[in-house]
Length: 158
Ligand code: ZN
Image (cartoon, rainbow, N blue to C red):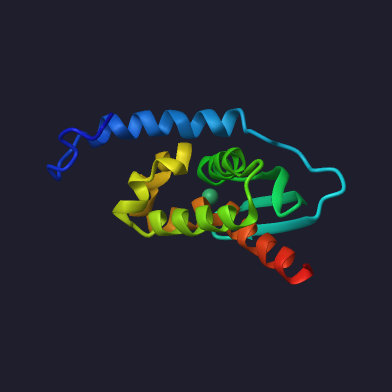
């Protein structure tokens, strides 16, 4: 929708920002998949001390797929919205796919234009603008740091 005219360099940032801001706050206030998976395959706790963000990610893996994903924690709207958006994308995904999403999101947070246009990123694209605020990038990446840690543990266990 924002594609036309968005290549001029001075595209309607404020408008996009408020739209994205709305989506971020919406996830923050009504996080998806909040809670803890019962009998999880892997459980990761991550902190971002510079902002005070905290995330506990629990995953249930079955036949190489993420059967269930849940998170708890506290912190700023960006960290909590990002993990909520992430959880939405991960349910019923093959583990390889989850790893790809994590890489893609990390690229996006480092300002990669291609990644930010990738529709498979779902609501996470609302966070693309955060890449301009290096301090907040850590907030956005916290959930994915937990995911990558989780994938490592799963890989080591199988
Ligand atoms: Zn934060």
